[in-house]
Image 1 (cartoon, helix red, strand yellow):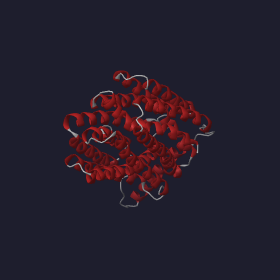
Image 2 (cartoon, one colour):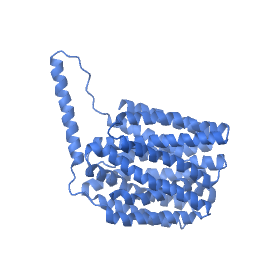
Image 3 (spheres, one colour):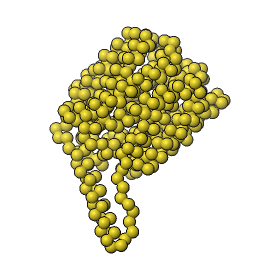
Image 4 (cartoon, one colour):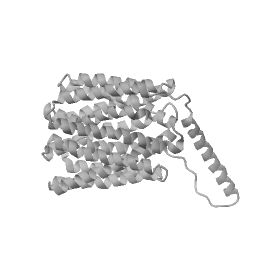
Length: 395
């Protein structure tokens, strides 16, 4: 498959997802707030560029170019990242890395939606996510092994740079632009015709005196609000979580990697289940249910604060696995729905609103954890997921 080369990119960021907060707060002596600011700056920089790259790739219809551009840029910037330990410089480089990172997101989404027909979108997106999640999981396992052997922080970051370079080389040979680009346009026309047909049918019944329900269009602004709330609550929880396990619970870096392996394995299972049940599931309801489950299971992390034991730690790991499964279902559902709702030229909107929620969440999460404790953090993250459920229930 053409997206197999993306696995190497995901390996790099799977490793970085856990290693980076430990590297900043542990090896470089930075604070949790420093790391929160770093991720917030990166997410903030990525938001306008998600729109920009999405518009540009649709305008030029050159999707392969932006994927190669993204991987090459990240390889170079991560190499520069490995050469310095000055936190303000690292913040600037990491923000630039995020700009290059989102350059491949919209083109990749468009390629999947154009290569496959609308009834196959959920299955295709889930297949892509399952394969690339294997890369993310492999990156975590790699971090687990290399941390055990005592590899330095700069060596691990250099490895992430090399993995993105491999992603660039393999994408150069595997990724091709489609000859014809029309599937999203056909879906948009079908949606308009379907809405018109419902309108004529309702008007006909009204003339016959038949009671009918009001026809409503989807509220795109409420859909986007649900995306922001989901991303906000997720990044609030996940961003400071490695530090929670490392500093608050006193676990080693190797064990922290092991815990996040289980979390990522749960997300991988979510994608696999989505592939198998793509045609049976009601994807609008999936987005709602995923938020409810995440809201409930976030509270399962609280017992570890009150009473740390093997039992509560196991409960936390199981909760993270369940939340990983629901994350996979949610992402496939909303990604497919967004490709219906979003017109050509705005393919980057999905990643932009997820990024906007990430900007708010990563800073608020680290700020809440540092100033009010992890109990407050877990409660607020749970409430955020529930508010996202309400948004998707009503959009």
